[in-house]
Amino acid sequence: MLVSRNLSTIDRTLRGVIGVSIFIFTLFFSNYIEDSIVWWLLFIFSVLNLVSLLTAWCPIYHLANLSTYKAKDE
Image 1 (spheres, helix red, strand yellow):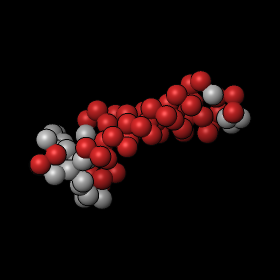
Image 2 (spheres, helix red, strand yellow):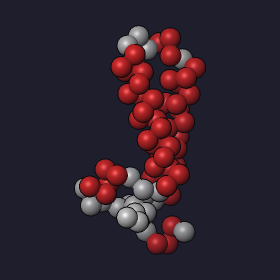
Image 3 (spheres, helix red, strand yellow):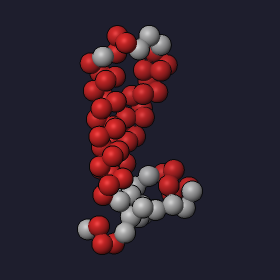
Image 4 (cartoon, one colour):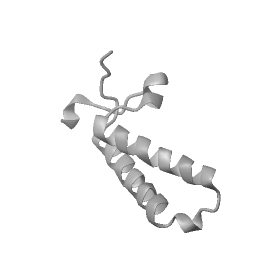
C-alpha cells in the first residue's frame, strides 16, 4: 500500500520542532518526569512526530481524510 503525502511544509516544520523538543526533554530532563508511563508516552509521541516529519504522512490525518499538503509546496 502506497501512502500519499498529507502534511504541508509548515505542518512538517511544527512537528519537527515539537518532536525534537519533546525528544530532548525526555532524554536529558527525565528526572522531572516522575512516572515512567508518562515518560514513555512523551517519548513515543516525539518519535511519531519525527516519523511524520520524515515521511510527510500522518496516520491520524489519513483516518480523518484530512490533508494540509498542496502540490505547490514542493
